Length: 113
Image (cartoon, rainbow, N blue to C red; front, side):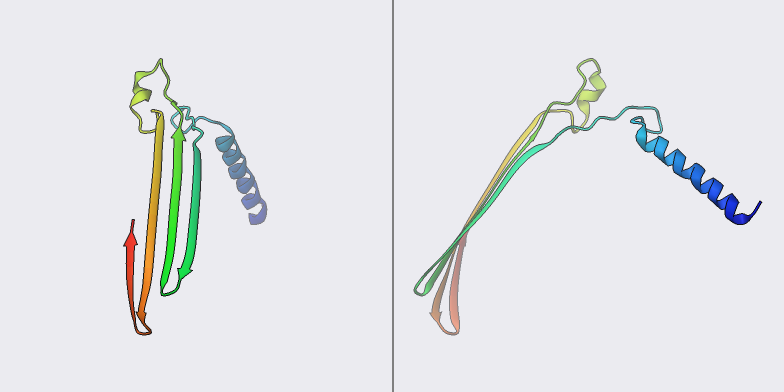
């Protein structure tokens, strides 16, 4: 048997094993894993305004992250994983910035966040 044919035979066998492994939802220990659908909304906004020597800007960031309850009610051990509980994590961030030009070589910046 030629080396090329031998390589091709083992390559095909390895590819078939990988297809079987990824097509089966069980991991190597025989345990089933489940994934949860994560819902999240994210918004970003920015506003710039120039008022003479002042340059005003504002930014906002809003995120709402929601994860459904995924634990099995008949299996208490599944309730102690980090992804089992229902989660709702809102996050808001606001920033206001004022850059004031005092002279061509001197500026003052104020940021409130």
